[in-house]
Image (cartoon, rainbow, N blue to C red):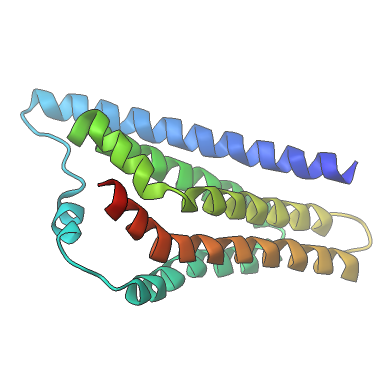
Length: 192
């Protein structure tokens, strides 16, 4: 029964991620359609294009990503221990899906199918670990918020389970940061 509940949480958050991504795609496509009538075009990657010409060390990339990726994770850890953890987790998953949809649409609108290919190559292979970590963190926060409402309060066992789930998600997140810092640039250099 408990395994089934975990899978239900994962499916719920995957659905929220997909909904956010769909909304992001639709919003940017609608905005670009309106903007193209006025002669504007989508240019979200101008800074990224200028950045691609520069060399950044993997160590500097790792330290930057460590700060940027772990800050929301620790915010989720703090919110996950409260009764509003489920709302925070749902909003975070939806927001990440929305941003993913916006950038996916922008890549397509700016560069066509080549932009889509570059978008997916830039996310490979770390996206699998990032999504798994995001869904595990969200499920842990939701499970903890659910036990906050039970009679008798939270037991030590629930704190331990939350800690183990969140620690495992942080390990996945750390591996994703390592892949994004060291493996992905090598992979993109070989392909592109």
